[in-house]
Image 1 (cartoon, helix red, strand yellow):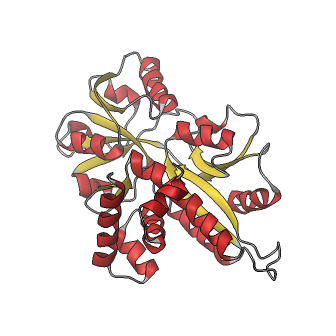
Image 2 (image 1 turned 90 degrees about the vertical axis):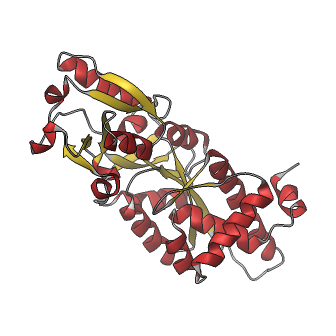
Length: 308
């Protein structure tokens, strides 16, 4: 059964699907409700009804945000395609439409757990001044590179090490992104202004699962070796929130990036975050496209995004 026939068979409301895309893109019921001009309780009800209708949990509900589950991310990609097809059918017999006014859709992949306010602002500015519509998909660094290589994504915002190995990718630095360390609030090292890997040789760490970000995990392990010790990782986690929660409970120190830190993390998790002075290479967030697959419109949007 195709996704189209599934949606028709399930008698889903197209408005609800559009609401779902907006909530998934914003990661917040409050923000999405404001943009859609509906009440937050109404929007919440639509999301719960949609989850009941498809028989899957689409969101992980956190204290101040919503994050797509694996099922939710897959459903988002299928939903965007359906909405695009419906939009095409709406104007199927409209002979007045010309190529220069047809909306151009771009699939944008971006890093989950990162503070990408600049990305949203830039995309919003472009969409308001052109006939381009963006569909946004949070994903892991590995999946972003794979998706850009296959054409699943037109443009991605990812970490520099995951882009450099692809000769067909064009990229430009978008956000500075430095390595940081999260500590329990009563940890002895919180009194030091800045920390180095040499200060961490006796510590226990909480690392992200290697399949989520293998290059980054290897980078911190190698940095420990350069300083004469092997990092002791007692826990491997699947998300930043899980790692910071365990840090707050005293289970170890967790690595994160400066671009993940929106200024609220210390208060939210009751932790202390310190800059690491070691040079672990360029891990900046870049905007990238696949030059072998990109059309002229994609190249134009990339050029606009690449200008800092």
